Image 1 (cartoon, rainbow, N blue to C red):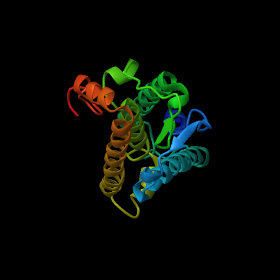
Image 2 (cartoon, one colour):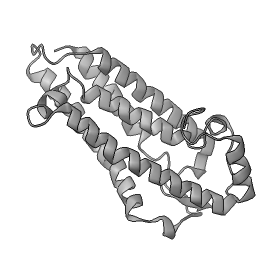
Image 3 (tube, rainbow, N blue to C red):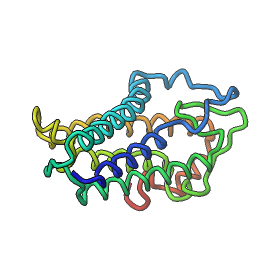
Image 4 (cartoon, rainbow, N blue to C red):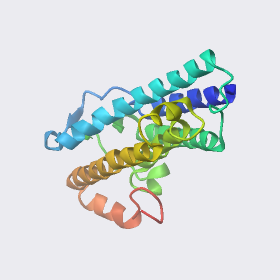
Length: 213
C-alpha cells in the first residue's frame, strides 16, 4: 500500500470538510424562511453533516489500513484517486470563491438578509448557483477517492455489496435533494427580488453548468 493513497485521502477529506462547513455563523439580522423548513430541507442539512462524517470515517479507514498493513497490494493509489482529489480541491476552491463573493450573505439555511442585494458578479455571472456546482464537484470527487478500486474503504464495502450499488445510492440520495433545494431557493429569490431576479435569469440562464444545465 502506498503512502500516496493516504495523503490523497487526507487532502480530499480536508477539502470536503471545508467545502461543506458554513464560512461563518448565520448573522443575527438574517431571517430563516419558515415556509422553506420542509422535510426535504431538514434532510439537506442532515445530509451535509453526514457527508463530512462519512468522509472522515473513510479517511480513518485508509490511514489505519496503511499503518497496520503497508504491504497489501490491492490497496494503492490509482488515477481515479488522483482525479477525485483534484476534483475535491477544485470544487472547494470554487466554493470558497462563492463564500468570499457573498460574504455575510452566504448561509446554509434558506434565509433573507436585512441589507440583502442580488449578487450577480464573480461566479454568479456564469451560473445562478455556482456554490451548489462546487459542492457537487467536491462531493463526487471525494466519492472517486473512496469508492473506487484501490481504496481500503471500497475493499471493505465490496465484501457486502457491489461498489456500483454504492454509487447509485449516492446519486439517488444526492441529486433529487439538490435539485429540490435549488428550486426552493429560486422561489425565495423570486419573491424577494422580483423583477431584478427575472432580469438576472434572462441574462444568466444556467442554473448549475454554464451552457448545459
